[in-house]
Length: 638
Image (cartoon, rainbow, N blue to C red):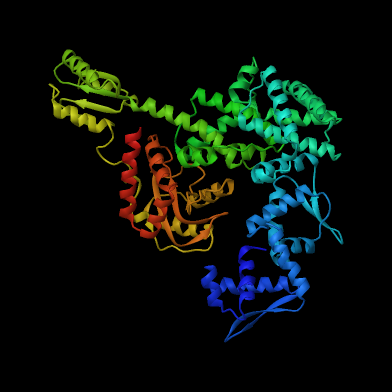
């Protein structure tokens, strides 16, 4: 029974009548909540020798019919620490079913948790959804009740992950055999060291828990079954030798007779845990098969097609992704999960890399028809963030043309002076005369520094300077090189594409209204709305924080722009509520570097305070001002 129910009974016992106002005031909840609590509480205690009556003029009163029965109920309150809300009850139920192999009746669970049958049914529904993620189900048998049903392999995965996530260290079921845990860790450390098999501390602890669960289940005569062909395949892997030594050590520690299939079970876990660098060093000839290459191609193409950020020729990133996919594909094959201890930090600090990783992971999800978890996605985000940082360093150094009308010798001298003054900011400084400018390939340059007017169109910004290169010229160039001259973020937003009056009940209804308005302002293809829905079907675009960032499946529009919609009331997008919709549209054939744009908008949208302020303000100028400030911060940090 939760604390509020206990408080209600205590108040009812202390005086004859208590009004709903007194309850609400004492418990800090609404009258409506109090009425709901009374309905549920009455439903429960009526079988425990008591019930609650109400009088319009006096309030609520506790009536006791069976003093002994009701006393037993009150005594039980003090004997147990029970869950107090739905989330805690779901955790409690999962722990109960995972630890108790026998059937249990719904009525017994209601009595155990002090909740009504209707409340329990809702909690059981949520528990079933968690079990379904592991291929398990709650099997119901008439007159017997409920118990978990499924493969032993899946059961162990669920039990291990649940134990690591939810078990309180104080009541961990394995703590009663501390010596076994210490001995197991010692043996495991020795084996992995001798076999030069390197895994992270997190993976090590995870493996220890898998082994403890396995030994407990084997002791209960619950074994993993394995197809002979699959076991033969696993025996060909380098990890099998390590797994055999681990199984022998477990047998020596416990005296258990462990079947060969369990050695295959440990091999599977090892193939999903080895570090990337260790994998590379432990395998002399790493052969990247065609399938893995195609997946990486698809991942990087998706990022480019959607965001126009190009990692396709980054060989270091490709190799990192290849190596990451080797254990990941093993985890996918065997439905293994790997938690990411840095997930929250990655989401907080690398929101742009996370967006790219979400897009890239669609390639894997399409290939294997499996949802890639946020934990796995964040590992990819780390790799992509490193690539972004490397690109940022590469592109900080600018290439410039120096155009001078007095001949090549003087232009080379000016170029030398500019190179000397800005050696930390400039990569290539190329002298050129006015006539030679017609022959230049502008695609590798960022600016033109000119001492003379250029009266024909060129695709680069022109900075007019004096030949003798005055202090004013130096200050002007420094300002431009730092990116603080004109805000670039402004051009992607307009008041015509900022809406605060749109309503709807579903994301499809809202998106349709938004696209209809965009169509009146921007030139978009007839397939635009359909492409957005296609992208929504592939992976959710809700990012928490009341934010969704929908976009077409590929770049479609003639220019890059953003349509911002702040709904009057939030709606459920997929799983979470959304009120701030950031419809992103990327130019179809654009070559513009959009990293500054992405970093700026990501920082704004991933800040809970920023989003809350913008939803309350519903003001375009406030949003643009915020974006400008964030843009300056991003430039200063780069």
